[in-house]
Amino acid sequence: METVASILHTSEGEISFLVDDVQVCQDILPVNKAWRKFEERLGFSLLAFSHNNSFEVIQESGNHPLVTAVHIAHSEHRPLLLTPDAIWLTIAQGFAQHINNHAEKLRSRFVGHSGKLELKVEAQKLAQPSDWAEVIDKWSERIRDNVKPDIHSLMVCNFSTTTSIIQTASQVVMMEAFQQYFDYMLYAICGIPGITVRGTEADWRSIRGRVEAIAAYDLGWWTERLLPICDALIDTVAGRPTLKFWQQIYKPKEIYGGEVITGWLADLFPYVNHSVTHAPTQKNPILDIPRAELTVEDGISPTRLPTGLSQASIALVTPKGKADLEVVAGFIGVRQQDGYLQPEIGWAVRKQDRFLKMLTILEQNPSMRSPINWSKPQGQSEMPKELIQLHSHFDGGTIVVQSEYPWHIRALEDYTYHELKGTDKQFTGFMDIEGDRCIAYSYICRPRRSQEDRNRSWEWWVIVGKPVWEGTDPIFGREVWTFTTEDVKVIANGIPQLFERIAKAKGQYYFDDPDFQPDDSLSASR
Image (tube, rainbow, N blue to C red; front, side):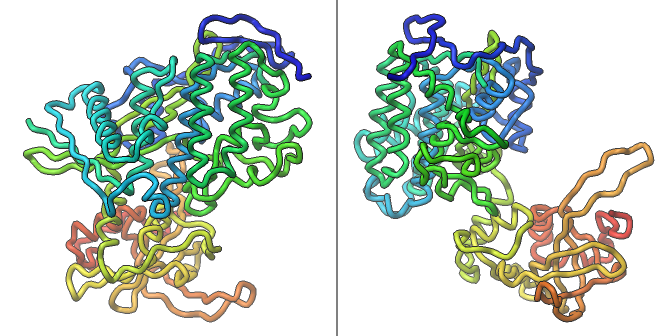
């Protein structure tokens, strides 16, 4: 018979119990304002945020706040607090990833239309976060009206612990899940010492029922691992927390070692990030190994897990024009309260990534090739994330705004290796233009601005030049081309800036203008 953990206290909808015999850490972790931390994580300013400006989360951040909370609780001997919302939102995001990875195969299971249906809502004002929450709720209602019965209630959080913020976040997860079926249009008229688990037994049984339901969508290979977790969580809130189960949330003691996750927490993620695209499209390999046979070598690095964020593109139409925005929701950080660590759920609105918007427009061009199949091995090991995004939309093609200025984007397999004579710099050619010239990129250390400047920043630099073929590398078997420092110009700091400048110049070779000033000097960089 399994050993039941020692109960610290129970109340309606909450149970606390001892897990490991360790000294509880009493030190308070340093914190930051949640909105500032979330802006840093997204890399964009927020137009709206679910939490007030004074709300704080801990400074330390990982790839996924649920995993971060469990990791710190385990490694620093801090209590942990879990809710049905945190567990179900993680599962729902995995379900959303599965739908997006197999959208056409599953289409008839969710909707009765082909293509994408516009879901229009109206708002008189968007000044407060509550206005955005109301808009998201309207989209949630539109989705409910246009998907098969029971799908809406399957995905949205409605537990005893669910707040209005969490419910909005779960609605965004649903919007992401169905973004290949709908366009969202907004019209403006004017080693853990102890754990506390919240939620009623009915909440956790509801999650079990939802897990059973999503198995029908070709997910039996995942849900068979989730159901035993659900049963253990139900036993926990019923007053029978199994000690062994909770000691194995992160790293079972018999397979400790390495910065990897081997506990049942890893089973909550059906997909892990692709090694090149960093998108959650690869089946979690730990799910192919019976739990009893797992070793430390089978563990999953936290960096391979999804971010815990869902996002959906929305279009805001006002009398002044159209603005492309994104609503982002999920785990925004780790909250620290009364010594306990708790993954915090929230949402935000931001401007849409302009570069991704450009790619969406460019992929409509008939000259663009089909997107690359990332499931097949690719030769490039290190490249700007924006080029990964580009090849995920189309694997090369020609941009022609003005006929005398074509921009030939290469297929990934046609990238070439370049050296800069007299330096140790190496470049990768990815685009061709008139005059037998090539545009290439490299990861360059920016020079110090002054003697007092101790900071060095690494950036993707883009250059243009006329390469010379030197032959074939006898070791790697690849062609070697060379540039000279006198022949090349630094024409952009990063791929997005290159495309922004191409657009601003209306397709002309802007760097051929006599007044063009290169951003940086290759001879001064390191």
